[in-house]
Amino acid sequence: MYDVIIVGGGPSGSTLGRLLSSKGFDVLIIEKRKFPRYKVCAGAIPFILSELIGDFPFERRFDHLTLKKGNRSWQLKLAAPIVTVKREDFDCYLLNMATDAGAKVVFEMARRVKDNYVHTGNSTYEARIIVGADGPFSIVRKTMGIQYPRWIETVEWELPLRAEDFIVSIGPGAGYTWFWPKKSTVAFGAGGFKDPKRWAIKLREELEIEPCGKVYHYRYPIWREGIRIKKNMILIGDAGAFASPITAAGIYSGILSALVAGKMIEQHLKFQKPFSDPYFREFHKNFMPAKILSWFFYYAPGVFIDFGKRSITRYFGLKDCYYKILKSLVGNL
Image 1: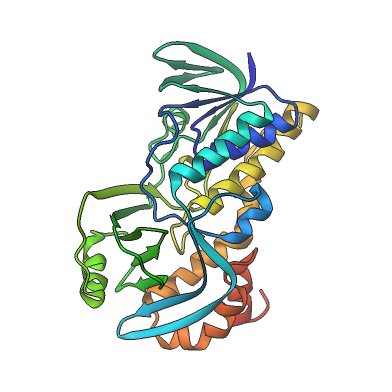
Image 2: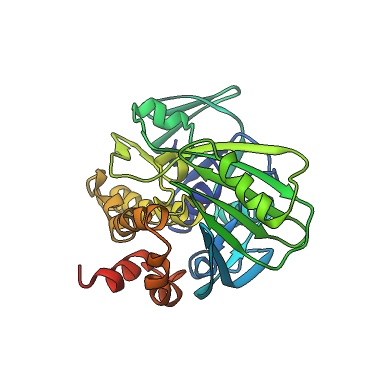
């Protein structure tokens, strides 16, 4: 009998495992693939994350962003740097931190979840709390009977290039293309609510590059208000649709979801505090402004970027950045 079973050993699951184990709880992480493993991901995160998880390994650091929309282009100096990571290195770092804190890890496929039990092909494990950190097609979420309506479709290539510019090209419509350098490769891809290749083609032609090698397709839900807890089960990371509603980035917000959930789980197990759903409301301060700003970024003309450039450069990458950007644009909220 464990205190907590975490299904999924990615960034959110490993972060939660580390947090709860450091508090003295018996934690089991069930991960279907042995680490290190390749994970398709553009891999850009705000460096401020180091304040929460320590000196994680990263590829490149950027203090400037090239933002494109239509035929316009802006150079934005970031308030806080963005770094790119290789998920095989980044995820290993986090999982090792969890095991160092005392979490146990088994590399098995979770095939069925019921009540307090997780069944794999080899064993059955029992816990007081079961956490779904097993990605967009979470078996824990399916067990809970929760569905999310808003899903992002992405396409990505790892290009064998060396580049210096960190580029984001917005639209047209609700999608964008990224060109994010790492040490010896560039993550080039696109994502949105329709076929993402239409956005990738636009930036590909502009940069005069030809994607080669394996192409990766990935889809996952983005955040909206909703339930993440039922009975003794809770969802974090992509399993709980915590990807940002403006950038669709999920690493940073997924780790935040793990930290917030960890506090609530600790209060429940130690002091019998209610195991209920209000914990995700802590995300409203950032996610609701992000949801509002997303309309302007994707559908408003480029003059919105002209008007908001000072605010974006002042706050982007900082804690509560979207709230601060929106507040500076529309006044007190």
